[in-house]
Image (cartoon, rainbow, N blue to C red; front, side, top):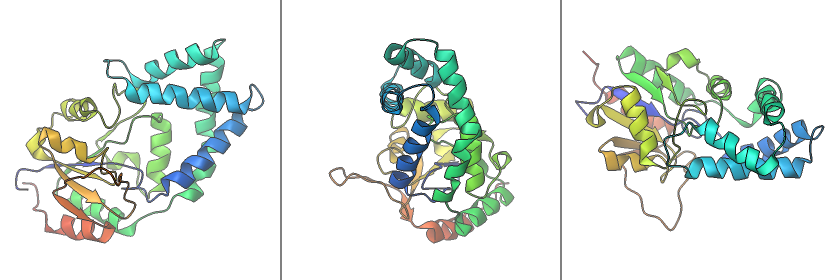
Length: 239
């Protein structure tokens, strides 16, 4: 760990304690309700998740929001600008009310503060399927400010999604981080630990662990929020 100077965090379930299934159920109901005045909510939800899946599956060098727009246009047709404007209005308004599904981890808040004091670069590599404004909201739900992190992945700027290695390669390249200099901290065994294939060390947060039972995984470190704080306390100060 002597060469590590950069900590890359996942967001949901890692920095942000969250029951992902409950949150996504509430999200679907909220966004569908927000669109009911202009289209059938069921049609919109189908279009939303069909386009989201296409974005996740894409491996061409195209920004995620552009892939999403193309798929939405295929599915819905019509004036996509009106739909897109309403999507962004949703993140300014109704999305904010979903914060009660999230909580905060005092251990993660302390760990991030300690790592900053020790001189580590702190990046957020959340799956870039939300606009930056939504990522900022979720970061604040977790008890942080966006300015606490040097980099935050997002829907508008990234070209790939998890679990593609290209996503992590892009994060490392954008931030000029060598694989040997980074530690990935996440709670999804398949989506976050895949970065090990690039030679990046990993810490699996198992408080809100997401792992497929039929797939084995390997991580350098593993533990709950308290264990990660204790781990952060052992790390050397960056000189």
